[in-house]
Length: 249
Image 1 (spheres, helix red, strand yellow):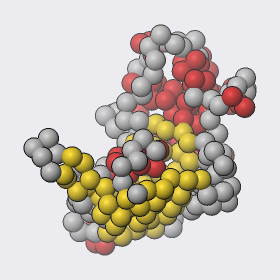
Image 2 (cartoon, rainbow, N blue to C red):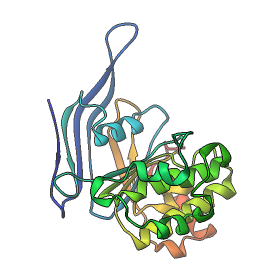
Image 3 (cartoon, rainbow, N blue to C red):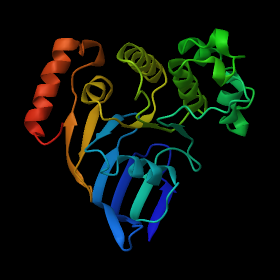
């Protein structure tokens, strides 16, 4: 049996999954998560890394309440009904709605009509609010998806490889845009990524998962201020990370 509940305005996110399995098409079940435990402090930026297929996205689905078939508990941060912003690997924009309409679709009733000029400005979308998704490059579509996730003023922001498949220049630009907005409007963030350098640039802490059935192998604190995380510093951080977790790619 699982529990999935808010914990109060000052609480942290707490994940304690004793067991999660999927039914196999060949019969039986596949163990995905086992004794996976970690917490994310209020306004902390945490990246989840681990081997492909180990269950990182499954963890996000459990946090979001999209899958209740697990043993354990998840305690959400925020208010009685915490607001959660989500950005998937694909933008998932409705093609028949404009950029602004797509962004406002996720906004809860109490924020309807809220002025979002600052958000469109911050993401470089001010001149594209009336554009349709088919008129956007992938990079701009990802900006619109990020705007939609942030427009809800989330207590918790969930990012599932949000910059995957972008060219490095575009991805880097979006990472810095995300950091700028998060610095001005901090919230609790859990982000899945396969890109260790991206994790080093963005995170306060990196949670490392094992192959499935996944558990937490350990954590890596990134203590250096973000403004100091230049090329050589990131290289040094990666070296330290690989010394601590030699099995990680």
